[in-house]
Amino acid sequence: MNWIRCALAGLFLLLISARLPAAHPLAAPGVTSLTNPQVKYRLTDQHAIVLKRGKVTAVIVDNAAVDTKLLPGHRAGYNGLASLKYEGQEENLFVPALAGLNFEHIHDGTTRLPEKFEPRKFPMQIRIISDDTVELYQAPTPNWKLESCGRYQILADGTIEYTFECIPHADLFKNGYIGLFWASYIQAPDDRRIHFYGRRTDRPDQREQFLDARTPSHGVDSTHPPAWARFRPRVAADFPLTLVNHPSAYVYSRPWYYGIRDNYAYTQLFRPRDQIWFAQSPTGGGKQNPAWDFQWFIPNYQPGEAYGFIMRAHYAPWSDRTTLEKQIQTHLSALKQD
Image 1: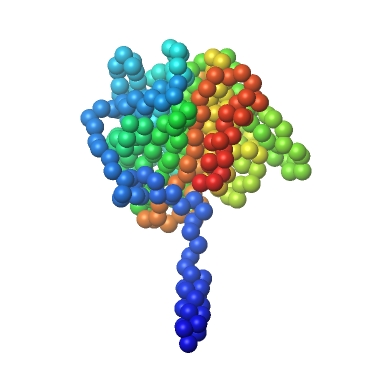
Image 2 (image 1 turned 90 degrees about the vertical axis):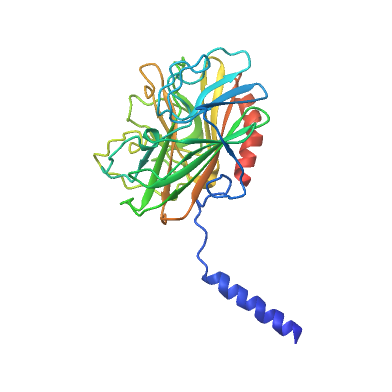
């Protein structure tokens, strides 16, 4: 009799699980204080927090202006990584007044944009998790009603792991997806290109190549989707955020890219499952200052549900691509497993 009861119980559980909806492929990992009530943090009245580990020093800022010896003339609205330096470096990787991994756009591909830079315009709260981890929390924004939390953790080798989680609190995104965008404004590099593995969009049978991509001008050939993209956003022809809706002739085949400034490589690495799109502008941060960016789309979202992605930003002296690929392999493996 016991085996019959066990078999019936197993069958019941199987039927119940079959009726449960599958988890959204972009469901939040449950890492930040937004989604995980077990996360403990303390608040601060400071607007800039220094994280240092290995040979890398990073400064995380909220949306307030900062004018200190460490961050002279940093403008309001530019959140995220205000400064990134390697041991012995005096100059910031990023444009000093701006930032990197700066969360700046929320959209749905329509021209309904009451505020183009909504994440920049409304307060963020710094939450200190530990000596090596801080979060930037933003309450539901006035226009899109998107609540979010970005966690910046500096790892043992100085790589920044960035985890972003968000909850839409209203069904306002008319094209059925949430579009989000991040920018890194690089301070006057000699080479404004980004470098990645990929192929031409119109040649799906082509073997991957190593590409050196520089867009001819802002908003032209500006974004590169993954070769395995499951989703293509519908975007209005007159959509004003031109870095979002102007795909290049390429797709990328490996989920990372880098740029070089002053003999240092800045590499952004992503989880394949998150379907991140690379983006770039030769002048996004000013005449000589490119933007090395990325964007993310959440299709089939549901109000009240949490979504998220994880990426890493690696910063180290540049020698050659082979050396860089060896340096980042551990990070790529970790992101693939998450």
